[in-house]
Length: 315
Image 1 (cartoon, rainbow, N blue to C red):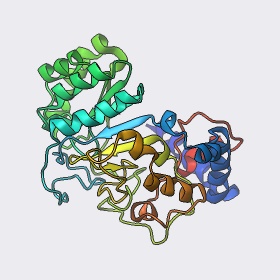
Image 2: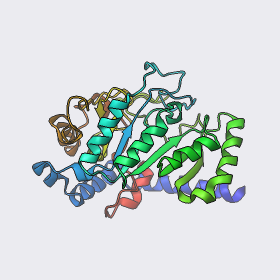
Image 3: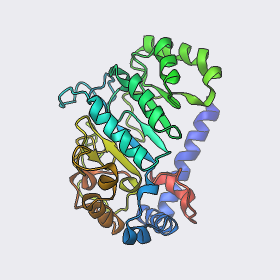
Image 4: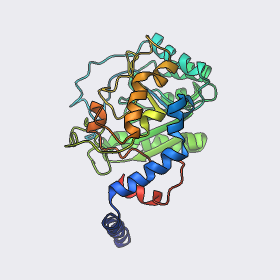
């Protein structure tokens, strides 16, 4: 107990000293500059070559969650969205668009929702695997409705990875999830990931473009770059594409898969305009971006910077 407390105190002291020596603006900007240069993003802007940067596609097949997480507007106590399902036609258009560009990276048939509340999720995963045989298909679930049969059906249909996030709002659910994980972790190995966090905990949470019910919006926009619109596409139930999973209300509407191809949406004028502003550290042009406190980069990104090791202190 004392050892854990000492480690925590050491982390707090380290964070205090780092922030005294280096400002957040200095550390983040040095990282932005290195990242942008090494990814050759300015050159890509000139030539419009962005499809190979697309690494994450979120597809929200139903606008509903059943978790009580305090940090998320999808909490049934706060969610004001109408409960809608994505049609099979819409889902297939998105996946077919990815197949056209020979997409091989991450597809996540969820966003701000609980994916297992949509009974079509199994057939959607099967279709995704059929059309995108080399893609990584991932789901994140709070596990409330997960059971052994559903777990096995997900993997049988082609799921590549399942994250079980136990938010501990029910001791019964937590016990069930621990038992499921213990039984199947050796069978599925690194395809099955189990984690625990507290549904009411705000520590380390971003404000999710101002939609976090207990944090709200920034008083003024950050003058920061953000990589998300360069690497991510987010689709909601009616086929609209957004540029970031933090944009809960899809204020950055980039168009609709029913009116344009996926290639056109990800390289079109709307999203290119957003990217140009972000390259100038300007978040004021977007209602979602100007309210968001996300630092713009993740520590997992592959790039070199003398100050990269300091970035986690500001994330």
